Image (cartoon, rainbow, N blue to C red; front, side):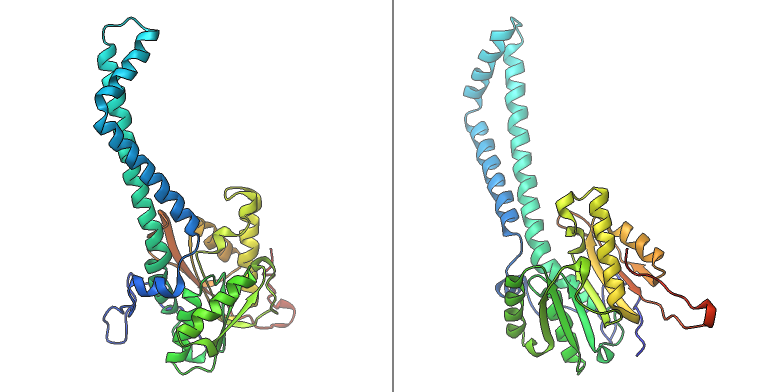
Length: 313
């Protein structure tokens, strides 16, 4: 089997050269998969509503607020400009609360869009980077979560008539059971298997999968140490090394993630991966995100000059 990484395009295209469009709208995607981290969305909306109410109160009770502030200013100063200072303070505070409400509503909207519609769209793009799914026997989705990418891979296997299977790995057994349910809803249950496990120590032997994919997951590895710490970075690199370890020689890896993509590229270069490509920036969860694809090289034995690479950190 010979797999190649397709060039990264801004929009994936079908055989006729026209952009491929998803057959589902966001309501259908949400109905099937729901969304992860709804607590974050709830937190953003609550604060947006709070600041909205606060800004409305400043608008309707502007004069009483100015009088209250002016009284406070007079307690500490005898300046004759206390009225102007109070009005400026009230206006400035009201403007800041209104702007905060707008920003929080925008952040909540972007978070919801990134979790549902964008996640589905990026999954479609990711599978388009493998040139021939019909020859794929085993694929792995690391951090499969609700199964958007997992089921997209399974659908691709089904469309190409492949006899392959895709394995979804997640930390939680409860999540994997939910993922199997969504696979059955999508009609690809026979192509999907889910396992509970730790990405830093994958429960698979070396050179096992033809394709390894992951969507907005690797950045969460090592978060118990804090995202910007050396320890967290080491854990992410360990996870990336495990992805490479279980990938067959000549196999393809495709990772969509946020924030830490440059360090992934550096690590893949250190591991001597080939055809490393980075997509154009896509804003997801209010930050920059990219798709990184690579191919694990084929190494041949040349006697004493045999190439041996340790994929583990």
